[in-house]
Image (cartoon, rainbow, N blue to C red; front, side, top):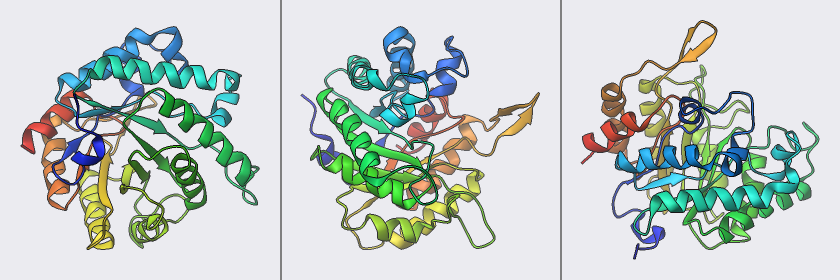
Length: 295
């Protein structure tokens, strides 16, 4: 019988998984399609990715639902299958996790902006995220992560929507780039702005994933978050890419070795990160190395 995830947080380092998309492609998924539909059409390869990360020693995996909100699914003509896709994803992840490890409901951005910058209406966005969260909650996830966000307004709506349907832990993560004024998201959000916006929203952890930083940049980003979070209840979650990609034959290739990745993850943990995982370019080998180095 697993201890509720909330009781683990802050008591020990919790390790999440790494990249999903590239691992699916390695197992036969076709680029350009809807990865979330694989939960129904090819559940075996999704389960294989989850299992590989658990075999590497991860405590939890993210469900294959990054783009499974109704707005994102509408681009594939699949918004009517939103609940089915999210329930299937949770079931696949739970099968791999068994009774001892955890599954985190993954909620990503819609790919559009709220009015007046974009066409999304706040009420519609709230409903879309709440519907996805309800399906994942019904599927039995142990917590939620709202990730790879660029804009604070969308992140805030998403977090409020998730919190409206669950009492389980919620993490909030944004993607940061390097600027002359320090790390910021594409929409100009700083670590301090993210922490201030999420304080009082009931999230258990805030931090970063994805972005365009190198590993030294991610370490500095973790330091910035540590300063912003100092003395507070909210934990730091860090899911960096495997460094900065190189362009090879018009493809982004991540060449950072698991060993070098692990070295940086030790530094990030020493900054105070309580939840560690990976994003683009990371593999079960990268996570296994990071877990081993942080024991």
